[in-house]
Image 1 (cartoon, each protein chain N blue to C red):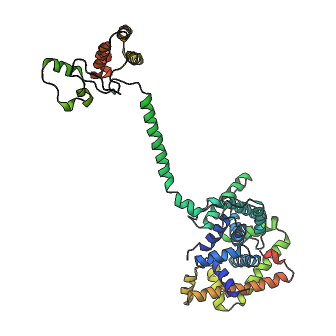
Image 2: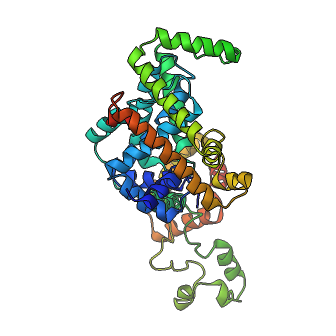
Image 3: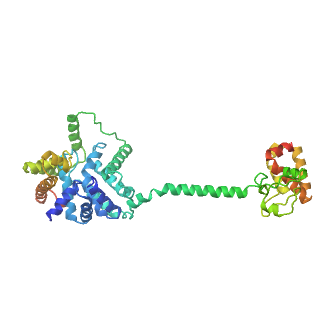
Length: 227
Length: 201
């Protein structure tokens, strides 16, 4: 037996061997039965010197464990160092997934939500209409959408911007009233629904007028008016 | 050089599928683990069974061992839990260590004789122990001091070098030579018929 190798084995047993040498010797130790037997005797000598009471120095634990481990499947080639390197992104990935889910949920809820007067694009208000009617001075260009200024100058029934919901259909308003019926007396609710039905069959101008009323007033004010 | 480099090298090999490296870890720690478990169970054979179970648990859990703590610390915890569970499941209470040392020793001897230790097993252990002690007595003083400081006091090579006022390399050499001398005596005894060579492992 190589004396230098044995000397290294003794130092490795004491955890006093350099890491690189440990790596090389561990490889050899795991395969060399004679080296392993010597390693086992070093452990026995240590136990004998420590005079560990009740401990059988010729214990067969190692042999029994080895027999069981041989029958076990080899451990997966997990690389703990790599696992440690990648551990940092787990919280970040979790946060990103949570944020993504939240964003999708918000978008979905917004898509599902009924178009309320408050969220609809603001048509030119009746107040502006009134001001236009009482004064010859037109609102400034900045206050009016470009598309509106491109159309005919009429502040009585302003044109709705194309591609957006400028008016709220009566059916949606009816749904809204039904959904908030707990705040509306039955009689007032019936009258309001009747007026919606009537306005549904009426002119487009009427629709616009109704929608403008809701556009100016928040929903709870509309309920108050309905009461 | 890290304190746990040797164990970690073996552990990494086991984690990569080298079962032979696990044998080396078991050989190194089997006596320590049995001694540890004997704080909870009195029967040496039962302690060995529990230590064996702890080693198997450790092997199966080794993919999760990241090396944040020393391997023996991790193994120690597994063994303690295994021993506690064994005590609970067998409805036994742990040994009370509040009793004085003499009482403990006398109890220990009685326990050993009552338990499943065979006379042959006791003779073998006593023979190994007396052989090691005789070999140590026969060592030159510098080798004896070095090996005793290492194994009995648990000093590092650097601490032993300071204590013996010599270089660390000399300490390493002395400890190695002491081990070789003791090992030679042990092999002579076993090859002489008391035990079989493979039982030394």
